[in-house]
Length: 398
Image (cartoon, rainbow, N blue to C red; front, side, top):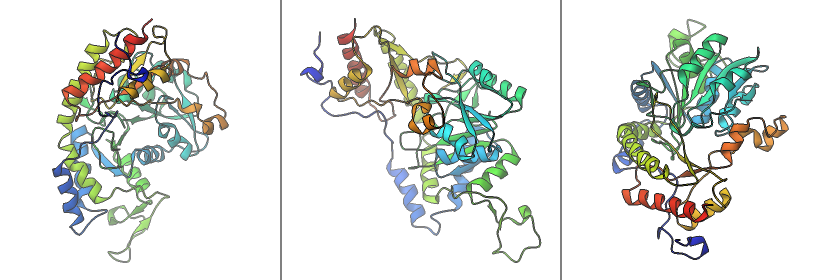
């Protein structure tokens, strides 16, 4: 049996490979530099151009760019009319922002459990958590795989709920042939550096509703309008006049960030193709490794995977997840955990949430491990990751 590097063996790699990494080319740098040399570096024409590209790509009628994915979720909750006394159902297996967006508005997050095989929110658990106070559902496309949109849409229609899709992981994913971003009432994206396309930080909300679009524009830009057609009080004083109509936030994106996003969007299809190639290779390899469980996908989702998660079958391995994680690090393959269940955090404990609330989530969480996945991975890099996982799983197999 091959000795692990953590016990003195030779590592699989001489240099470290990380779980995620952006791909910034010279064309991306030039796009940003061109804007920095021009007259607008914020609130300029590249923002509008990027919004148009994003709407066209996803198939949505409107897109609103904002400063980050968290801001996008907050704006979506504002546009949905979420407020004190309301409840918003989401998944606990996500980044905290998916629940925090409800708290920002004075509402209460309610956690529905996940599907044991896909790790996405379970529509039946959503249905069980609905009360007369439920206002919206924030359904997270975990790892990039689309949630069961049809089933969740039906629930929202039945109970008169707003469907917010948290697609921070899922730019490029399609559901039954239609782009994620065009199917929910509002869909939120993130362009953080580890996501499929990036503009440093950055986010967006897409919608097909003219009314929600107007509310999103107000929410992300101080609640201020400058267009005469939208003024509540007319005639106004002159072209300098603007009008605050609601309490909004400064969640706008800069023009040079938007330029980077425009450049990156031109590469999205090639990034998706490479991610899918790596996922296919991982799936085929790990389906044969004892002690490793592969995430399942629904047939409706043509997924652009943001994360690749293996789940350790700890009943078949004589190690803890921490020991497996450390062994991967010793092989120079850096992993990550996505995510600690949100309601486990001290903030949510102080709000009255307790462990045991979502048993499937907690069971799945104990074994999940995110391994490297991004377009810059070479075939050799991918083989090295497979070798490391297989080597460690074989070593610890019971």
